[in-house]
Length: 99
Image 1 (cartoon, helix red, strand yellow):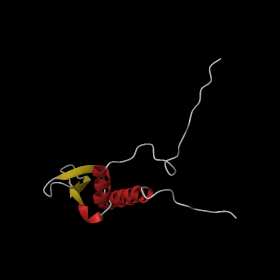
Image 2 (cartoon, one colour):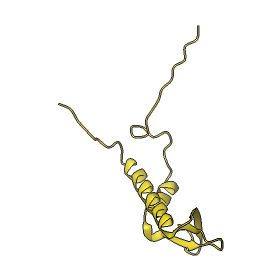
Image 3 (tube, helix red, strand yellow):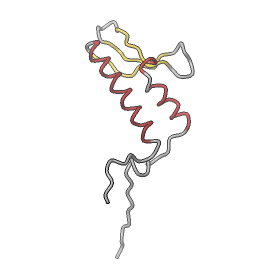
Image 4 (tube, one colour):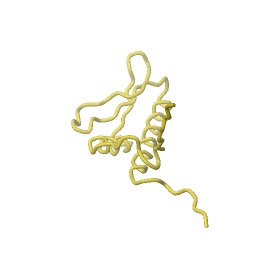
């Protein structure tokens, strides 16, 4: 008879992979809204881009949206997402304790 032993971890208690310093630097960079912009494409769509961390003249395209409002909302969501990732690098967040 064969037994299968598995161990699971959650992201908040033990990250599956530890990000390296380059990844952390990128997260810090894209977590700042000042590093983002919106450009209009020839087809009328709006593209969100962030400034490349190592080259001020290079922009990295991320998403395309039909409206400026949609593009700005996508940027706001990305900023929020990467801010949360940076918070979790500090360790688990205690949400409730018991006595």
